Image 1 (tube, one colour):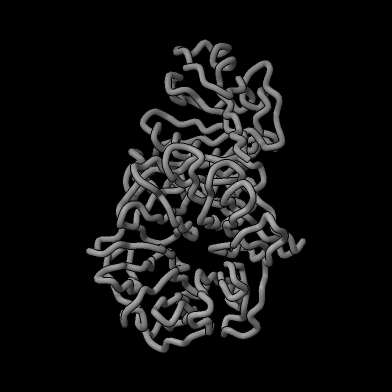
Image 2 (image 1 turned 180 degrees about the horizontal axis):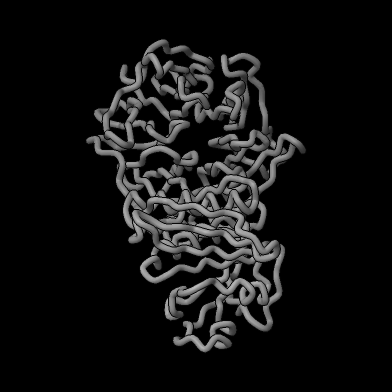
Length: 432
């Protein structure tokens, strides 16, 4: 499952218009022009006036990475948009949508043209930085998501970020692979990052002096708090927030074993133990269902790691994804899809460690990967994209998979291993 969808380049069309500048040859390119045939996804083009090249490129990339369009790419050597937009020209070449970007005081105006319906489907003005750099890039990502919503009716995922571990620190990166930033600033080794539901805070374990408490960190102010019940010795593993942000689950690991506990982080009190494994079994990696009523987790109570589920209060614990044959090994790190329909995890199978998805509708688990060693899945807010770490290329990097098209793209390219990714919710508030 390593298909990469080709992007469309306006080469023949540029020649027809007599515009200057050859386009560099690319692999896997379909030349949009006389031979163009519209595919299953609608064709879309992003055009901008002078000075908005950075905004255009970000929106163009966001729409491509949404996996909902075939994006026609205008070469940098082509003159910027000037005068009125020639809608009939783009309609002639099979495109369904055209995005027009023009500067206004303090930002940019975007118009989304429905070429088939001959109408403006969206017209908004947004205060964004034309340079498209730093934290202000998030405003451009939000504009891209508005375009996706106007066309499909579904929210986009451009205005999101990914937390992950590299070395001893937690890092953050935009969903398009830009704006890499170190987040954790403590003296210990940071692990297991998790997002609060509103995207304003993160949690992670910070290992120092042979103990690993959980740290709550505000992404805007940088303030840090230690979660109650996590600093008494041992490691407080795999924190996760409840969907309402009031509580947190974690797995304290001590000499007596590893079990899942719940803590009230709104009042910063009231720790309660939910599983009882003792030295005979470890229970960890909890993941709430989107409605907060159930919890998936990993347990060794059957002898090897399997995926279990229980009520949010710890009742009705039962195996959810049992072994399905001699070639099946242990299963790890379940994560519930935001729509509640599936659980992703990684499993040791005959051809290595692979990303799996359990579907509640069919009751079956299916492997999504087969190349390299693949671990640590995390869902995008749209429930159709997954991020995970993989050894398929240089080192261990993060890759994003679209479950509908099987398209896969590399997100990180860092020295050392990028691991333990956590995809944010849609970010609508202030960003760091």
